[in-house]
Amino acid sequence: MDDWMAWYNALEKPGWTPAPATIGLIWQILYPIIFVSFGFILLQAFRGKVPWRAAAPFAINLVANLIFTPIQFGMRNLPLAAVDILIVWGTIIWMMIAVWRHYRWAAIAQVPYLVWVSIATALQLSITAMNWGRA
Picture 1 (cartoon, rainbow, N blue to C red):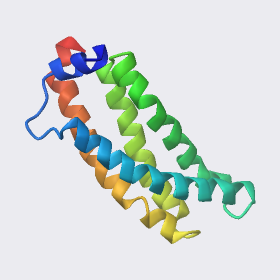
Picture 2: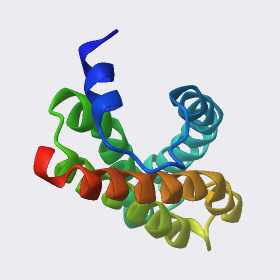
Picture 3: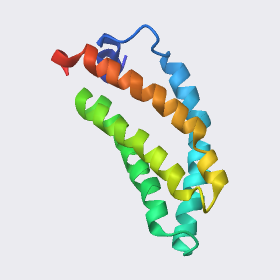
Picture 4: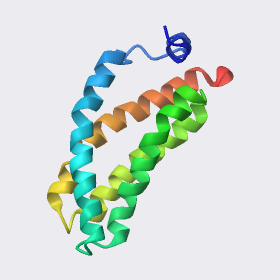
């Protein structure tokens, strides 16, 4: 077993924690939605069809999403991972608001992502709180 997986498995977690395979499946569904909608909005910003301030939360979200795994499993820093996932969650709401008047479909496409990240945020905050002395 990978060292990071042994570390994660040893953490206290709430009883409603999804199985790792479930988490992986959800991300396999979400990543294509994220790729298409983010790519579209960033392309429209490059073309000048949406202001960069509307694309900014997409860029920030992408960075925050990408650094979560290295923070959580590489650094094993639960408090910092909790802050990071709050940024991911907040930027989803921000980007939905930012693009609503330009491309409503791109805002609506974020709903499954927002639902999942809301669950993941509650999970991360719970794990962080349950393991505070170990974090």
